[in-house]
Length: 63
Image (cartoon, rainbow, N blue to C red; front, side, top):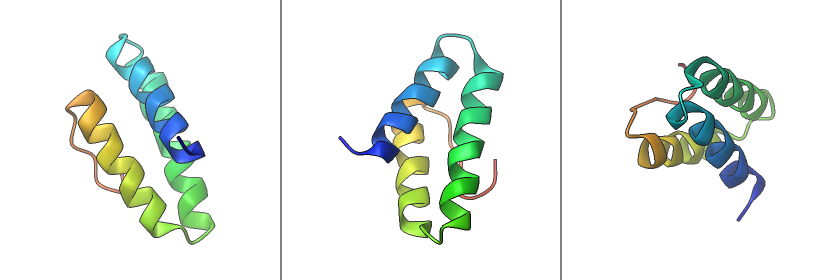
């Protein structure tokens, strides 16, 4: 499991446990960081993992 996977899991956990705002803020921080680093592929991967874990469709890079 990579770092992106851990952040997806952490933000998804917060989201599904009712901490929606914190989960989305965590995801947005990771999206912003990956975008700044030019890691678009990892950002898209994170968005897909979020979708799989939460059932919520989110497109990288925007929330």
